[in-house]
Image (tube, rainbow, N blue to C red; front, top):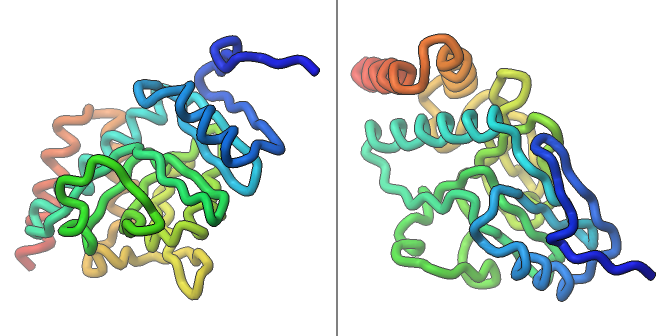
Length: 215
């Protein structure tokens, strides 16, 4: 049997590598070897490990969508804790995932000052963001961990998945922002950013949010 070190594996941007029959201890060891300061993202479900390397387009979209979520929360005066691409894992379910971005909103208070997470005790994030360019989000991992709301951006459009009775369903309404047309707005301003740039787009988005709130 040939054994390779992770440092010998090069995943080009926009590509992914799948490893099968990976047990939980091996998954933990791989996480430790990869370290926290890395560009790659991982997903683990029932023995299958995926390591993917995002494209610059992916990183751009995840950042601007995360910024728009922050603007929404600020303008609505909703408290939050942002945990970025933290690794969320639970051994009892053999699941692990690293969202492109995530927020604690309903459960923000219990996460203040947290440096390490234990999903056997801590709640999952209330809102996760995933940008799907070269691979599909593994919803089964999010489903097992009980993340109530996922925003998936794919083909220049936002899709909202809401957890209902243990399964994800597509929703036109965000439970976090039920009174705003989130799907249409996020899609529109993400596309707009490609022509006028990030900063003008975010200023325009903030203005739009304020106008909606004032009505």
